[in-house]
Image 1 (cartoon, one colour):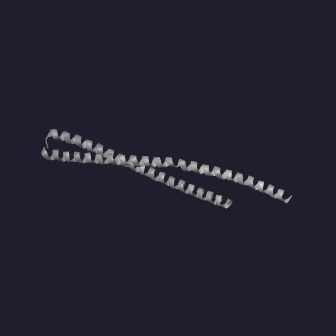
Image 2 (cartoon, one colour):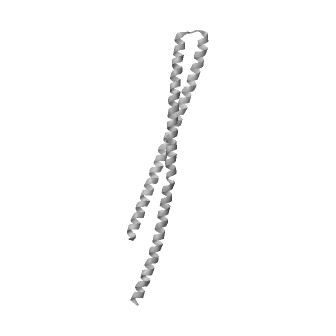
Length: 146
């Protein structure tokens, strides 16, 4: 009779253990899915970095062009101060103002992108900490059942 009781207890423990293993496997699967979802954030961050580099190149080109226009403007003013050159000078000054405005707008966009990048990095760090703590809990839980 004692052996039957021990056998029944073993069966009960086996059933409980199987349920716990099933739950742990489910939790592990969820964590793997959550970790796979984090890959999208990395892609977004890389895209934002590439866009930022592209904007930097555009700003450099605009500044270079602006410098060329300023040099041309100076040359025209020093060469001849006649009426025909004044209209060209006015046109160039107008173009310089437009370019300066564009550079300023580009700088504002870059600043906004940098803030978005910082926010994305903060969110990634938070997610990483969360997954790390959940993983630690899972490891502790699994080691406690052994």
